[in-house]
Length: 195
Image (cartoon, rainbow, N blue to C red; front, side, top):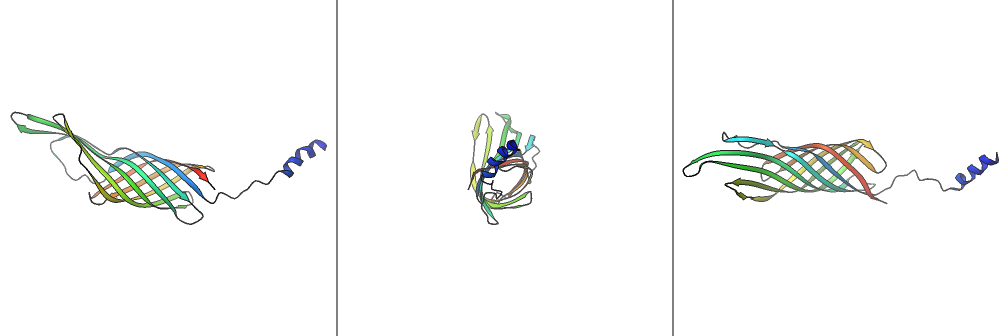
């Protein structure tokens, strides 16, 4: 009995562990997957090769509070389209080949809210579009800054106290360029600070 009492006394004197979760947190996370441009504007008979989309990446930060909505900021990189074309231009050049690519960087902010193991986000901001085209060894990279929107749905299949792993689907709308994009992949998030 003395041994049992000796084990129970420190437990009785220890302060109770708080079962209440932190009320506020700064969450950071990353997304990795594949993106596609949903509308390819032209079909070109001189196109010898093309690829829609590519490997996409994004990072985000969100402020979670006791209230319903959580503001977030999100920065992402999305390849949209790449192609190779040949064109007959006549003497003295004959047939010329060109390689082209279209990518965008996104800078978004907006609210998010969680329901069960799902997170819904809607944001607005800017898309930095850049075209890269190479002809006769010369490369040009015109770019433009357009407004747009982001809609995302995440589902957590692993949720620990401070770490979450899941899948995410993203829909982006680049307004001025009239270009929608879709991305699907995995997401990883965690609480960097809690208070």
